[in-house]
Length: 416
Image 1: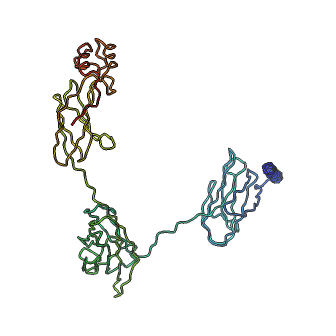
Image 2: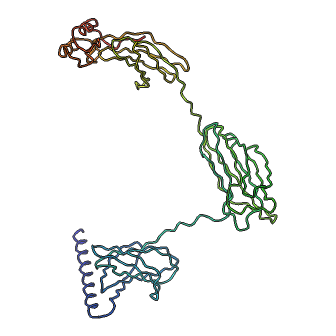
């Protein structure tokens, strides 16, 4: 099957070269305009191959049975060739043109698409495709509702605007708006009429009550609503988590004693739950060690919540959201101390004072000969700092003495 396709491709190219060669001969036999070769165009969206040069241009006939929006592309296949695409009517009168492509909309009828070389010569790919045209937005008079913001928390307020859109020539002398909403979700207040019907319009308000209200507005002293805009606004306060649809249906009058109901667009207002901010409490205490101490709080998932460096005397104070934690005190070269901690909202809890034990130089939770070996290997130096247990800047027998006092002890130390 693949061999057959390759053979077919070879035959098509050979046939194209034969046709082009014949065109060369015809063009050379004449001293006037280039040869116009009429091609056969059968399908939308198909890709056809063509060839143009200084002696040859190609014409593609098209027949539309109805109005068509379409695009044409003549894409050069090789270097050096640029194409010019020309759309003409059935009599050859030019309608439009483009470099390499064009887009047009034409009624039913017969047309020609000419492809000419802009520069160079060679093969090109030809396509014609329908173009989907997005219809313009409706221009019929209507009413609409918007909310800013369109999502509020319980207790927060959104400003809702009710507008008239696409007001026709001559405008409206009056309008009546009937608005509905869910009283379980929002509370309506502060209904304010805007200046759409003039600065001193006559207004009437019925409600709000039972999930609805009516706002009636009439222009005074000959004033009318002549341009699109906001007719009135109101506040919507979130009462309960959920959503409510706010709809305001408008009936308008042109001063002819007739009320016409307009299409309306609603808004969905979302009310979310109240976000409760965590209430903090305070934890204090004192940790004694010969070095700087860090006190840390961890939650039930052993995630660090907060930490603080203890003061020089070992006292500390940290704040965290109310809850149950594990508190840990650490110092370089010392066994850790750990214990439970309960933080109560708006209260201060105090941990029992604790003393860390010197000697865990390698930090594995055991004071043993490996820690002593580190002191020996670092004797009369200051590094590693964890081996300088008395924090005097030199590692020697005094540090070994502190280690020996806690020899074979393990951590963490219980911090009640």
